[in-house]
Length: 59
Image (cartoon, rainbow, N blue to C red; front, side, top):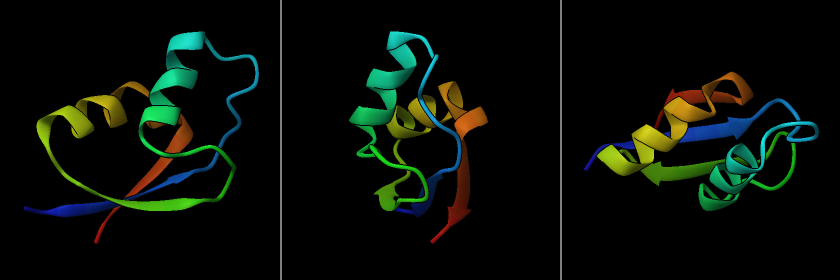
């Protein structure tokens, strides 16, 4: 399965609780932390919901 690298580039402060929980589910909890995850449809859907706070790259 294809992998992607996701990096949080904007803060979760003053964001809706749902977006905070989505970031937590992706394993992101601090700025400029990068995680490498599988590109499953579920993960891609979560990334799409908080894409304004992330940088996405192919691994």
